[in-house]
Image 1: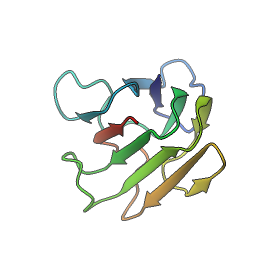
Image 2 (image 1 turned 120 degrees about the vertical axis):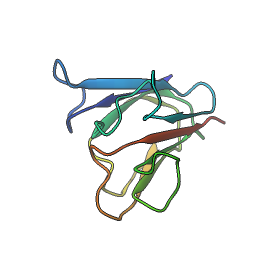
Image 3 (image 1 turned 30 degrees about the vertical axis):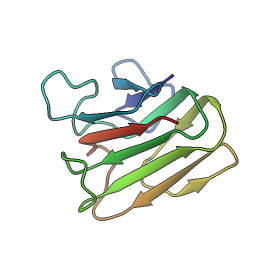
Length: 120
């Protein structure tokens, strides 16, 4: 029950491209500018959803305080997900399993500074 983040647009990542992970088993907020953050700030360009429960909402923000005044993307699990790669945070995608909704300003890939997970 986690989201694994990568510095490239490939899943699984090549060696050296992994930049962190956050759990999805419970709700949480992470400012990636904080020391000891679980994901490298301004690095993630893609992610793998692993064992994510239906109803989970994941929001990625360019703003380090989790505000929507800059780019942000929401990923929603519509069904239980075993393993799915999200290759970019900048394209709207929809399937029976999940959806990605991108709110554009000037680009989010490689600029993620805040992560919010809302578990069902």
